[in-house]
Length: 296
Image 1 (cartoon, rainbow, N blue to C red):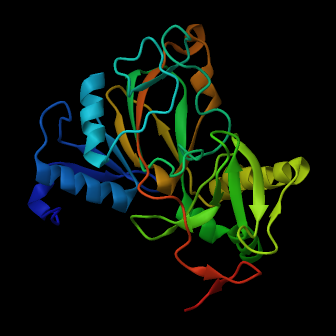
Image 2: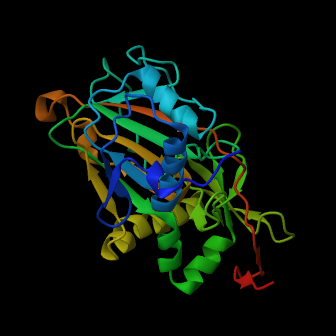
Image 3: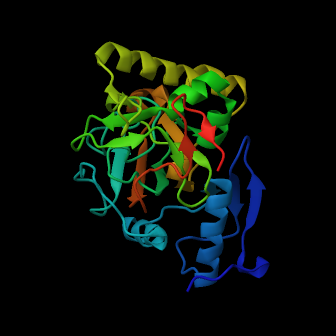
């Protein structure tokens, strides 16, 4: 049975990152990690949503998978590049000979929105660092509660249908399975349609034009509202960085520079693993016909 980690179980230091998340020093993930330390890392990821482990050198594909397994079964749905060091490691690059290109550039998203349950965690490790190219993250709970009341009420009425894997319908706003906070299931580049008032007599699927209008509205929140409110964390990669992120709590996107040519910025290679979601997105509260929450 999992037990609450004691303060002594954290043999590493935490330093706040800008906006949210923590930078981690004092632990070598290449070495064996005690169970109680793993428990503490899990607590810290849920609390802070993103942990950036600095100065890790190069972690092998096998070790990356071992670390990932701390958080549950891996779910590997992506194309397997021939240069990947392990079947469960997604290798991305700005060089098609070194990894999959164009990854993360189709819009703000959470990983695995097309799955029955979006991935619960994503773990990233930079192998070769270019001179430009970052990953931007946004805290979904804060974004939801930064919306004007009318807009948030409309989003409460929406469900999204992915353009992959049969397009299962999931609530746009739902309850995070571990933290209990509001979060989003979304992908601005892989949404076939939205559904208003899913599961009610008023249920209605959006057409192409309305779908695009809603996607544009959501994109505006991430590229205008969130930066204006100081909610975006831009991670500029350093050699040895290893990130453990609460995928269900954070939206993210790769910046355009990640796809600049090797001649322009040098070689970029990143490894990523993803962990199976624990349950399908669902609201653990009720709303009325106008999308406002009902107090029980």
